[in-house]
Length: 203
Ligand code: AMP
Image (cartoon, rainbow, N blue to C red; front, side, top):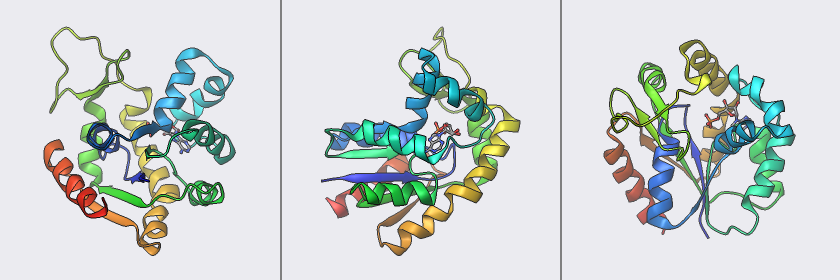
Protein backbone atom coordinates (compact mmCIF):
# COMPACT_ATOMS: atom_id res chain seq x y z
CA UNK A 1 0.00 0.00 0.00
CA UNK A 2 1.44 3.37 -1.03
CA UNK A 3 -0.16 6.60 0.14
CA UNK A 4 1.85 9.69 -0.60
CA UNK A 5 1.12 13.27 0.37
CA UNK A 6 2.97 15.93 -1.63
CA UNK A 7 3.83 19.04 0.34
CA UNK A 8 5.42 22.25 -0.82
CA UNK A 9 4.52 25.79 -1.81
CA UNK A 10 2.45 26.47 -4.92
CA UNK A 11 4.74 26.16 -7.93
CA UNK A 12 7.27 23.90 -6.21
CA UNK A 13 6.58 21.20 -8.82
CA UNK A 14 4.16 18.92 -6.99
CA UNK A 15 1.95 18.33 -10.02
CA UNK A 16 4.92 17.72 -12.31
CA UNK A 17 6.52 15.22 -9.95
CA UNK A 18 3.16 13.55 -9.35
CA UNK A 19 2.86 12.88 -13.09
CA UNK A 20 6.22 11.04 -13.08
CA UNK A 21 5.41 9.09 -9.92
CA UNK A 22 2.06 8.01 -11.34
CA UNK A 23 3.75 6.53 -14.42
CA UNK A 24 6.64 4.88 -12.56
CA UNK A 25 4.75 3.46 -9.61
CA UNK A 26 1.20 3.06 -10.94
CA UNK A 27 -0.42 5.32 -8.39
CA UNK A 28 -3.67 7.22 -8.74
CA UNK A 29 -2.97 10.97 -8.95
CA UNK A 30 -5.49 12.90 -6.90
CA UNK A 31 -5.09 16.64 -7.37
CA UNK A 32 -7.70 18.61 -5.45
CA UNK A 33 -6.85 21.74 -7.48
CA UNK A 34 -7.57 19.83 -10.72
CA UNK A 35 -10.83 18.44 -9.30
CA UNK A 36 -11.96 21.94 -8.31
CA UNK A 37 -10.98 23.44 -11.69
CA UNK A 38 -12.84 20.62 -13.48
CA UNK A 39 -15.94 21.51 -11.44
CA UNK A 40 -15.57 25.17 -12.37
CA UNK A 41 -15.34 24.23 -16.06
CA UNK A 42 -18.43 22.07 -15.85
CA UNK A 43 -20.34 24.74 -13.91
CA UNK A 44 -21.32 22.40 -11.06
CA UNK A 45 -22.62 23.68 -7.72
CA UNK A 46 -19.20 23.02 -6.19
CA UNK A 47 -17.50 24.84 -9.06
CA UNK A 48 -19.75 27.87 -8.54
CA UNK A 49 -18.93 27.92 -4.81
CA UNK A 50 -15.19 27.50 -5.39
CA UNK A 51 -14.56 29.86 -8.31
CA UNK A 52 -14.19 33.15 -6.44
CA UNK A 53 -12.24 31.52 -3.59
CA UNK A 54 -9.68 29.98 -5.95
CA UNK A 55 -9.47 33.16 -8.01
CA UNK A 56 -8.47 35.09 -4.90
CA UNK A 57 -5.89 32.53 -3.73
CA UNK A 58 -7.77 31.55 -0.57
CA UNK A 59 -8.65 28.03 0.56
CA UNK A 60 -11.91 26.21 0.01
CA UNK A 61 -13.36 25.14 3.37
CA UNK A 62 -12.17 21.97 5.06
CA UNK A 63 -15.56 20.20 5.16
CA UNK A 64 -16.02 20.55 1.41
CA UNK A 65 -12.44 19.36 0.79
CA UNK A 66 -12.65 16.22 2.94
CA UNK A 67 -15.87 15.34 1.10
CA UNK A 68 -14.03 15.65 -2.21
CA UNK A 69 -11.18 13.45 -1.00
CA UNK A 70 -13.48 10.73 0.36
CA UNK A 71 -15.08 10.54 -3.02
CA UNK A 72 -11.81 10.68 -4.99
CA UNK A 73 -10.04 7.86 -3.10
CA UNK A 74 -12.96 5.41 -3.35
CA UNK A 75 -11.67 2.07 -4.60
CA UNK A 76 -8.07 3.28 -4.81
CA UNK A 77 -5.38 1.52 -2.79
CA UNK A 78 -2.24 3.29 -3.96
CA UNK A 79 -2.47 7.00 -4.46
CA UNK A 80 -0.67 10.29 -4.39
CA UNK A 81 -2.39 13.34 -2.96
CA UNK A 82 -1.37 16.58 -4.63
CA UNK A 83 -2.74 19.72 -2.94
CA UNK A 84 -4.34 17.88 -0.03
CA UNK A 85 -4.11 18.19 2.94
CA UNK A 86 -3.59 21.94 3.01
CA UNK A 87 -4.45 22.51 6.67
CA UNK A 88 -3.81 20.61 9.90
CA UNK A 89 -7.57 20.01 10.11
CA UNK A 90 -7.55 18.29 6.70
CA UNK A 91 -4.59 16.10 7.78
CA UNK A 92 -6.45 15.11 10.95
CA UNK A 93 -9.59 14.34 8.95
CA UNK A 94 -7.52 12.09 6.69
CA UNK A 95 -6.43 10.12 9.77
CA UNK A 96 -10.00 9.90 11.02
CA UNK A 97 -11.10 8.17 7.83
CA UNK A 98 -8.13 5.77 8.13
CA UNK A 99 -6.23 7.15 5.18
CA UNK A 100 -3.03 8.30 6.89
CA UNK A 101 -0.18 8.64 4.40
CA UNK A 102 2.96 6.50 4.72
CA UNK A 103 5.16 9.10 3.02
CA UNK A 104 5.06 12.87 2.83
CA UNK A 105 7.32 14.29 0.14
CA UNK A 106 8.16 17.89 0.84
CA UNK A 107 9.41 19.78 -2.22
CA UNK A 108 11.16 22.85 -0.92
CA UNK A 109 11.50 25.94 -3.12
CA UNK A 110 12.27 29.62 -2.38
CA UNK A 111 9.74 32.38 -3.07
CA UNK A 112 11.63 34.18 -5.85
CA UNK A 113 11.85 30.97 -7.93
CA UNK A 114 8.16 30.29 -7.33
CA UNK A 115 7.00 33.70 -8.47
CA UNK A 116 8.97 33.32 -11.71
CA UNK A 117 7.71 29.79 -12.31
CA UNK A 118 4.06 30.54 -11.68
CA UNK A 119 3.96 33.68 -13.77
CA UNK A 120 5.36 31.63 -16.69
CA UNK A 121 3.10 28.62 -16.18
CA UNK A 122 0.60 27.75 -18.89
CA UNK A 123 -1.80 24.82 -19.17
CA UNK A 124 -3.26 22.98 -22.12
CA UNK A 125 -6.98 23.19 -21.22
CA UNK A 126 -7.74 19.85 -22.88
CA UNK A 127 -4.96 17.59 -21.56
CA UNK A 128 -4.19 19.61 -18.38
CA UNK A 129 -0.51 19.22 -19.27
CA UNK A 130 1.45 22.17 -17.85
CA UNK A 131 4.29 24.09 -19.49
CA UNK A 132 6.44 27.08 -18.67
CA UNK A 133 6.97 29.74 -21.30
CA UNK A 134 10.55 30.28 -20.06
CA UNK A 135 11.82 26.81 -19.18
CA UNK A 136 9.52 24.25 -20.79
CA UNK A 137 7.60 25.98 -23.59
CA UNK A 138 4.50 24.38 -25.13
CA UNK A 139 4.85 23.02 -28.69
CA UNK A 140 4.43 25.72 -31.33
CA UNK A 141 0.79 26.42 -32.12
CA UNK A 142 -0.62 24.64 -29.05
CA UNK A 143 -3.43 26.53 -27.36
CA UNK A 144 -2.51 27.10 -23.72
CA UNK A 145 -4.05 29.24 -20.99
CA UNK A 146 -2.83 30.96 -17.84
CA UNK A 147 -4.54 30.09 -14.57
CA UNK A 148 -6.34 33.09 -13.12
CA UNK A 149 -4.61 32.47 -9.79
CA UNK A 150 -1.14 32.48 -11.42
CA UNK A 151 -1.31 36.27 -11.84
CA UNK A 152 1.40 37.85 -9.72
CA UNK A 153 -0.83 39.57 -7.13
CA UNK A 154 -2.76 36.34 -6.49
CA UNK A 155 0.48 34.31 -6.31
CA UNK A 156 1.62 36.51 -3.42
CA UNK A 157 -1.65 35.84 -1.57
CA UNK A 158 -1.33 32.09 -2.24
CA UNK A 159 2.18 32.13 -0.76
CA UNK A 160 0.91 33.92 2.35
CA UNK A 161 -1.90 31.36 2.72
CA UNK A 162 0.64 28.56 2.24
CA UNK A 163 2.90 29.90 4.98
CA UNK A 164 0.09 30.38 7.45
CA UNK A 165 -2.13 27.34 6.85
CA UNK A 166 -0.14 24.68 4.98
CA UNK A 167 3.50 25.01 6.06
CA UNK A 168 2.66 23.77 9.61
CA UNK A 169 2.04 20.37 7.98
CA UNK A 170 5.81 20.03 7.47
CA UNK A 171 6.26 19.71 11.21
CA UNK A 172 3.09 17.65 11.54
CA UNK A 173 4.47 14.92 9.23
CA UNK A 174 8.05 15.32 10.51
CA UNK A 175 6.83 14.40 13.98
CA UNK A 176 5.20 11.30 12.54
CA UNK A 177 8.57 10.33 11.01
CA UNK A 178 7.27 10.14 7.43
CA UNK A 179 8.55 13.43 5.99
CA UNK A 180 11.25 13.40 3.31
CA UNK A 181 12.56 16.65 1.88
CA UNK A 182 13.66 17.30 -1.69
CA UNK A 183 15.29 20.43 -3.08
CA UNK A 184 12.79 21.71 -5.65
CA UNK A 185 15.11 24.32 -7.11
CA UNK A 186 16.69 21.94 -9.63
CA UNK A 187 15.73 20.69 -13.08
CA UNK A 188 12.57 18.58 -13.25
CA UNK A 189 14.75 15.52 -14.03
CA UNK A 190 16.99 16.03 -11.00
CA UNK A 191 14.06 16.53 -8.63
CA UNK A 192 12.57 13.33 -10.09
CA UNK A 193 15.87 11.49 -9.45
CA UNK A 194 15.86 12.59 -5.80
CA UNK A 195 12.22 11.58 -5.45
CA UNK A 196 12.97 8.22 -7.02
CA UNK A 197 15.82 7.58 -4.57
CA UNK A 198 13.40 8.19 -1.69
CA UNK A 199 10.82 5.88 -3.28
CA UNK A 200 13.42 3.10 -3.61
CA UNK A 201 14.05 3.27 0.12
CA UNK A 202 10.41 2.93 1.10
CA UNK A 203 9.51 0.36 -1.59
P1 AMP B 1 -3.62 23.93 -6.62
O1 AMP B 1 -3.89 23.54 -8.03
O2 AMP B 1 -3.26 22.76 -5.75
O3 AMP B 1 -2.62 25.05 -6.52
O4 AMP B 1 -5.00 24.50 -6.03
C1 AMP B 1 -5.61 25.65 -6.57
C2 AMP B 1 -6.57 26.25 -5.57
O5 AMP B 1 -7.61 25.31 -5.27
C3 AMP B 1 -5.99 26.62 -4.22
O6 AMP B 1 -5.35 27.88 -4.22
C4 AMP B 1 -7.24 26.60 -3.34
O7 AMP B 1 -8.04 27.74 -3.54
C5 AMP B 1 -8.02 25.40 -3.91
N1 AMP B 1 -7.62 24.14 -3.21
C6 AMP B 1 -6.99 23.07 -3.76
N2 AMP B 1 -6.79 22.11 -2.85
C7 AMP B 1 -7.31 22.58 -1.68
C8 AMP B 1 -7.40 22.06 -0.37
N3 AMP B 1 -6.91 20.86 -0.04
N4 AMP B 1 -8.01 22.84 0.57
C9 AMP B 1 -8.50 24.05 0.28
N5 AMP B 1 -8.44 24.60 -0.94
C10 AMP B 1 -7.86 23.88 -1.93
